[in-house]
Image (cartoon, rainbow, N blue to C red):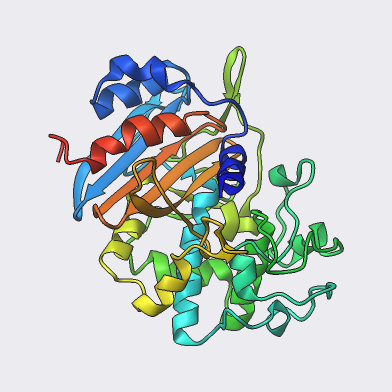
Length: 360
């Protein structure tokens, strides 16, 4: 249990965390905490949307979407790279395909993608979606590719590599799992992954500000993506994330992403029996992985259960949490990588929305 928790902390926050005590003077005011994050140089800009029982509790932008033009962040309009918070979007589409019978979670990947090279052991869609299939993660600069390749073409990156472990025996978080899942979804549905998600998830939920990023197109509302250096922030390297759209390639606004969380609370996705498979932690040797199918499934430091995802990519950081017992959705997006603030968010900020404070 502790090993997996440490793994996730290192995965989504690879550098040393900001000490929470530097935010003591922020008190119990979310505005002060978020403003202090900007002042402390965590990111140029932050957008946050918090919903409580279906109503907006907080929706605001802090800092800058573009440091050069001094464009402020707008939570309804500013587009951020949401990185691995894309996985719950893809998982929602997979849940719909499962409910409709288009795809069977317990069938082999090869039933849908027969051209993927055979490995030592077979593995299922469920194992891929829950990161227990044994597929490797990024090597070198694979996380920052900048060329327009399709999902199918991206198989060349990792198709010849052996499995890391026999499927179903261990957990290894990576985005190539979801490259394969999205390819299986494409083959099963007969249309592109992006089109299927748009038709079955984004349009029905009115998520009109959520889509892939085409580097060749100028999006006036897109936040500039930054990386932090000793001298300050600089523009992040250009990347093309479309081949890994399911695992980490979407753009969205904090307001749009919150709509997805609210749809889950309102039970507007699919039947509870199907959703339970996605929102329940898997177990290995009797120990929880704290991961369902495309969703982190865990508890906060006070024991409150939540499901959601953290994302950390080139020039973008995201938190997308749904607390079912409190009926709270938190969507927080930033335009910089590795802000090292997860402890501040989880220990200082989010409890203010969960503990019945005067904000509610």
